[in-house]
Length: 175
Image (cartoon, rainbow, N blue to C red; front, side):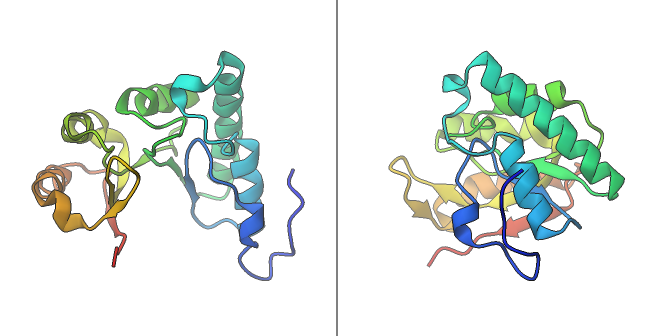
């Protein structure tokens, strides 16, 4: 487990590192979220293509443990489709969801940089998507306002209306 400050507030940023996937844990203390995320191998940012079989197995095992802890708190976990992550492609995300195999596991979807994969992603993942992260990056990692991919977001939001698991759209504002 990570050393962390008391749970009197949000953990200091230095205790949270970018990693192979972002996970949202609802209804758990902040310190426990940090521990679960760190133990699930959510640090390192190596991407699915560069993860060794041992790295992948550890991520699956720790997400299973995190899922069990979250289930005991009647909570859900949701790795986000995110570049340089264990969930950096639709295929790697689908595979991770299947390997972890927890009923309280869903995913957050944000479009990958590649427009072809972005257009196909929601159709494949939508049964597993609980939240749409309305945010986009350009090829150099620059943040784009949602309007930069308006056609994609219109298609995704329309498709999401028929997906019972997808209950939220998280809008990230880019100035």
